[in-house]
Amino acid sequence: MRFRNRTDAGQQLAALLMGYRAESPLVLGLPRGGIPVAFEVARSLGAPLDVWVVRKVGAPGQPELGLGAVAEGGALFLDRGMIRSLGFSETEVLQTAEREAEEVSARVARFRGSHPAPELAGRMVILVDDGVATGGTVRAAIRALRERRPRRIILAVPVGAVESLDSLRAEVDDLVCVHPAEFMLAVGEFYEDFSQTSDEEVQELLARVRGPRREAGSPEAAMDAGDNWWV
Image (cartoon, rainbow, N blue to C red; front, side):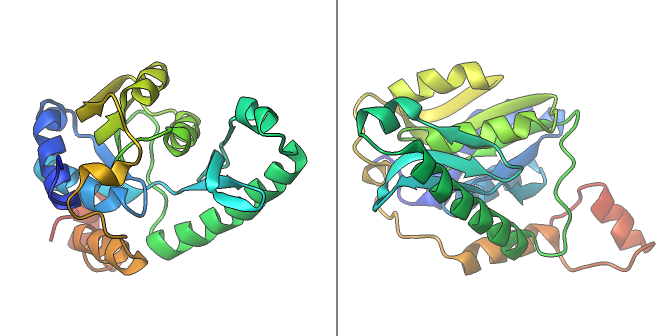
């Protein structure tokens, strides 16, 4: 095992990202498992934290087999080579993608609530997940983020399959990984505790960095607008 849990993974990852602290980054975590990792990164960098929602697009009748991903903002990534090689109908896969897009919208509402989506134009964004296996969900997230015109996108993960990381480097401005793995069956094999992160845990961690809702025009609201979210 490389990491005790996602908190430990986030702390180790944060240590490699401290050089970005002075650039006032925005940390975005991929829910659900990426949020505890991103929370530690954001805390160490003194940076604001938000979610960026992505859903795997599973094969028809085999939802555990990922054929692509759909992200907040509408970006869709499909592994058409795999779809063809396995004999699946792209029309059926697209129907699955539409259903997952609806779930993305539901999760955005659940996790972000009344808070607006973060403004990304011109900002440095650090995108965090708990690991990269095939890279499909991360790729969809990156492509959706690019459409919001951030200044730079940094992909940061505790562990990732070397082949997948290499394929993602061209999609981002920098890639930071604590443990690039030559052989990986699943991300969870690198964690002692890889128990599922609940919706409630995601909401609780986000609430901790956002703080209570403020009345418009108050000094506290002005502080929130300056990304001073820590409580």
